[in-house]
Amino acid sequence: MNDTTLRRTGFWSQSHHLDRMTLKELIVAYLQYPAIIIYLGLAAASIGAWFYHPATIGRSMLSIAVAVLLFPVVWYTLHRWVLHSQWMWKVSWLAATWKRIHYDHHQDPNHLEVLFGSPANVVPTVALSTIPIGWLIGGPGGAAAAFATGMIQTCINEFFHCIQHLSYRPGNKWLAMIKQRHMEHHFHDETGNFGITNFWWDHLGGTHYAGASARPKSMTVFNLGYTDEAADRHPRVRDLSGGVIATAEFRQRNKSA
Image 1: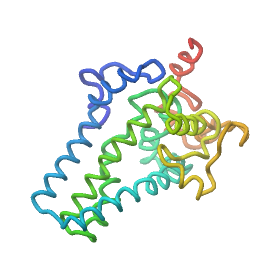
Image 2 (image 1 turned 135 degrees about the vertical axis):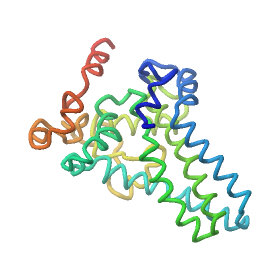
Image 3 (image 1 turned 90 degrees about the vertical axis):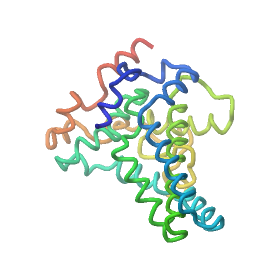
Image 4 (image 1 turned 120 degrees about the vertical axis):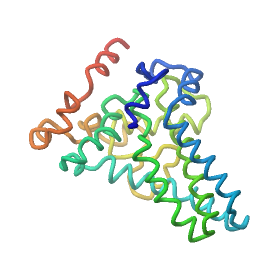
């Protein structure tokens, strides 16, 4: 069953937009979202696998620590050079995947259903990023600990990502800061501020900026460089999307606001 089918059943038969939701409504939606249930279920299964075939406490803790440290590196790398790539739409069999995993989110940043990653893409990525290094550190138990950590971090990352798109001003300084940086990524210049909760790699990679005055406004912040000219050469994403700037629904909701 694909992600589209999963999110079109029950509670998710309707669209949800974070700019119209409260934190309480988000929590209810988040805990019912099929992908989050899958991620938490996989984390629980991995913890069970650790109990069945545990590594030593030291090796398990090291596996967890490495997974925690790797997560922002992997996210930054994928977000900058894959999700914001200008090569995926040029490959016909990857164009639909690129549209689903990130283009749709930038087209309508507050649309909850396309904010969450698809399990078909997320789970293999987390597995490849955590299981081999965990196995090298602690065998099957280390692999289980690292993978469970990666899935839990994914859930945390997704939750904070959702919070960043809620229409409210956080009282917590750290939360306000990460929200501001992420909003700049979506509404000012998409070529920077690739982190969600951790912007250390943006600093290291030279992609961090603070405030709209730090950079000129990008003309491709909603289409990620997939312009009319690009769509004329590679029309697959445009054919699937019905446009290359922003969805009609997004434009209409902004006019209403």
